[in-house]
Amino acid sequence: MRIELQTYSVSDSNSRGRAIAEPAAKSRSEFQRDRDRIVHCTAFRRLEYKTQVFVNHEGDLFRTRLTHSIEVAQIARSIARALGLNDDLAEAVSLAHDLGHTPFGHAGQDALNGCMQAHGGFEHNLQSLRIVDRLEERYGAFDGLNLMFETREGILKHCSPAKARELGAIGQRFIDGKRPSLEAQICNLADEIAYNNHDVDDGLRSGLITVEQLQEIDLFARHADEVDQLFPAIAPRRRISEVIRRIIDAQVTDILAESSRRIAAAAPVTLADVAVAPALIAFSAAMHEQNQELKRFLRANLYRHYQVLRMTNKAHRIIGELFAAFMADLRLLPPQYQALAAAEGDARAVADYVAGMTDRYAMKEYQRLFSVGQL
Ligand code: MG
Image (cartoon, rainbow, N blue to C red; front, side, top):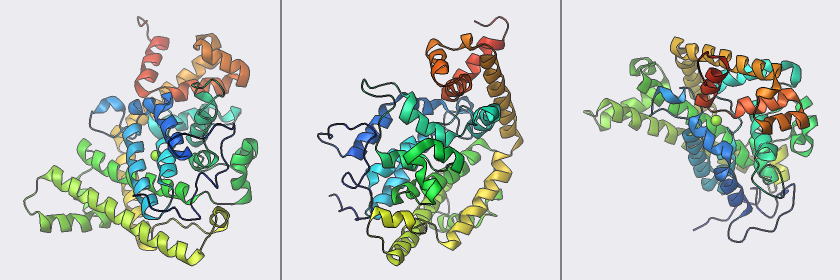
């Protein structure tokens, strides 16, 4: 049974709609339709072969951008549904939020941003929007996916005022200092919950961090104690799963309580009220601090682990050299990107091409361009 949406949630009727008008969907809501368009797009399938923390080929069990995005969608949908908000929109934004990521995770984005300094920079968030607005070529009537305004707004998590001015209506809220929909706010926190928890899981699985180290972290230790009391003889892997599911549950439960309290205090009625209210979707102060502690731990012990940094270093080299080679001779680009360069500038087209690569495609392309004896 579908729960009635709150008046301050995004709905088909209060949405700002699509840039290009289309006939209404026959059997779906407009935001279901957005989700479905995202699932069918090329950039979505590429997420399977893009690094979250561990490069795709390092192990079959680690998260990729695809499984990360699905976990974000699961968490966001649960929170949205429980708060009477539009879970179809939360799901659509979650599935699209990382479409613009380069190969090799944040290392790839930093490298590409460095290459693009003289050409307007590169930011994965803006690139996600560029993919759904422009780069996907699937429909006869328009470039991109022609998504609903609020789906696009949710994808554009942050943006500098200078960029916002270039973007027009979708960037206006950054100039006006307004907040996005509650559904978009949910996706931001669901993203954090998903990656902190699955990075603990993948970090342990990889052996780069240990359970002993994590015992120092309150959020982990507290739930590990509970698991040990319930299941004294539990096997190590199951113990980790039981702890992580409890952390996710505790964080979601905390957001539901804190957000309900904030919504009750602000008493929004319309979407416009949400835009000018303080952040209404949030962790409690206590959970925020515990979450920060976990993030600091992961930064110090996992993201800066020497084995991860080796990959980071390699990613910088691969991305930097690919970018330079294409800029030096655009004729090395596939024809559709040469056409894009003519339309939108050389550097932007090269960045689009490099950003769209999967990890292994980037490595193959690197070999094809630079290895003697490689085709
Ligand atoms: Mg993410």
